[in-house]
Amino acid sequence: MTYVNIFFAFFKISFISFGGAFGALPELQRIVVDVHHWMSAKNFIDAYVIGQFVPGPNMAMSGVIGYMVAGILGWFVALAGIYSGSLITMRIGSFYFEKHREVQILKRVELALRPLVLGLITASAIKFFVMQSQGAFFGAIVMSGLLVALYVSKKISAISVIFLGGPLWWVISYLSLHL
Amino acid sequence: MTTHISHNHPTLKEWLIVCLKIGALSFGGAGRAMLVRDIIVHDKKWLTNDEFHQIYTIASVLPGSNISNLSAYIGYKLLGNLGGILGVLALVAPGALLALIILLFVPIDQPDIAKIFLGFSIASIAIFAVFIAQLFAGINGHHLSGPLPRLKYVSRILVFIFVAISILSGVSFLLTLVSGLILCLLTEFLA
Image (cartoon, rainbow over all chains, first blue to last red; front, side, top):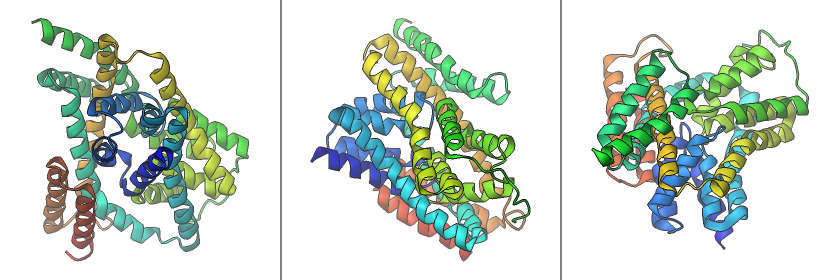
């Protein structure tokens, strides 16, 4: 049954996403595109792009994928899968830590896991950057550099950077096609 | 650690409104946890700063989307099961509905619109790169007992490079994850 498969695909992702869901995106792509053949790599990128654009937890793309695969119920089931994982983990986590308060050891584990989390999200960011900037890689680098400079120098906020990126990229792809 | 016990206590309705607000206003990644802290610790005083940071540590160590882990824990702690479950629902709903509306009503296959959305997405990776750079600084800094010994620092950098290259070269995700976990714990607790 597709709905059950969708639910468990996202449920599983929830338990292997350390340091946030972003690091597990390559694995999600593998499951959705290569294992189940639910969608093309291009559709996966579309889902990712929409998910990045909307506010809230950054796994809104789960719902988009669910909808693309199985309609409105798929949307619901995918979201239920990814966030029920979070609810279960934290139910156990909060029960345990409210009782024992052994946060000190957890702080050490958190420090210890930083290289892993950093490796996962860096690889993921590079992968998605390369996939999205196809055909205009140099332009994407220039645009990102410019936006990062504006953001870091506190000239514009994160939201403005994202909204500026849309039209800017339109101009860059237009130029790279016509020059 | 339990110095300021005298905080306010939200009703379920107040908590859900806050979750909806965070779900609807938190654009663009890295700043989201800080938005949660500002509202819950500074404005509403439902938790002390210490409590928030403990919960944040737990939420980011355990697997799952950070911000939903954070809301689930705070909801459970303040208002029990219903607070956690409905809180996450309220947090997720605005973005998930907006995504659905875009999918249904915006012609994202139309080339010009596709380019604009792609631009939003590339820009969000650019913001994310800044966040990654900040985390990278955190690999070395602020260890529990001062700066890291050189050997530990180098081994952490090596683990980072190993994990990144392993994922980029298409090695199995689970294999990378498990070996990365083991290497991280070994370098922290043995080296």
